[in-house]
Length: 189
Image (cartoon, rainbow, N blue to C red):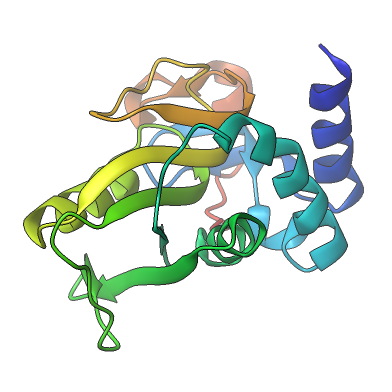
């Protein structure tokens, strides 16, 4: 690992955001590791530092607005927008689907950067990209603190992560015995 990866993992461990046990991820997959970004988001100095580390990777992204899914992406998206000097909006769940509410608007061809905390399969990010496209905006990139797929997840726009990791994930019916022996928790991001 390089020094940036070491620093990022150190921040996650220090704030209790990197957990070990048996977890059910938002994707429905199971894992022995969980990034609970809400823990790190309690400490704005840590969020500021994580986005400072991410920001150089965003230098070539030409966007007007940062959009994040609630809840997980809110704090990260807002800090990305703050550091980039861009507008920030968010989507939230309504009837189990993400929607743009609160009178937020996306202009025709408005360049949108989608920001998320952790991506495993990218389902919520894809919902965000679909919303931007359906409202006439132009998604230009996706950014996240942690890409759990280690670069395997792909979108129709560039995908920029601060940290790429691949902790094994398992379908519920394919758990290794050591993981199956531990009660599963669904802590939420």
